[in-house]
Length: 276
Image (cartoon, rainbow, N blue to C red):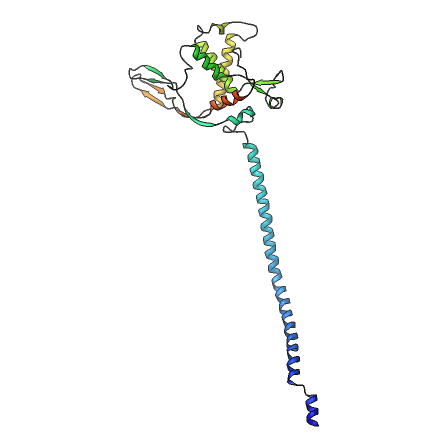
């Protein structure tokens, strides 16, 4: 009987196995929670520092990118259509799309030839714009000088000095073509016997001397404005005992033929009169 009582009072091995793991689990769980809590407490400052560093890096990067964007934008505003390759803001804006840069050798230099005589060297493949006048030369000059460019009201509003309205069109001439007109006029002055009309005096045209002065002054300012810095060497000519400028050099130029082509494509252009 006592044996049976002891068996009832004493816990069995199964009961010990059941209760023991529960007790151990609760203890381990508690200890684990404490460790995790300590770990969280210990790692939180590190995470915060990492987050602060990442945030600072992002803010710095953002403002750097913003500053770079503003700088590029300002550079674009300054550079847009405001240089030799793309056109200056003072130039005829519709024509700037025709600007093309090319290298071109200049002709017309003076040399001392084999017979010890001065000689002007012309481009054998080009038209003749100098020398004794001919009808063909006059025609070629008329093509070179060209005519006026018709503009819309919106285009004319961007032009300095105002443009007169002529039947709903507004006519201008690119400065380069006006300069060529002046060169052609001075050419005619040199051969005035061939062009006696340049000496005519009429109420609706400037005096001959006024026109000459106008062209010389316009060309002087235009040449100074472009300020071509291509170096011109001076070579010793033994036969003449003097230095001669070698002007037959390669220059960086705007493609004039392309500009002529652009102007010819505009409708309603008309020829520049000699009175200009």
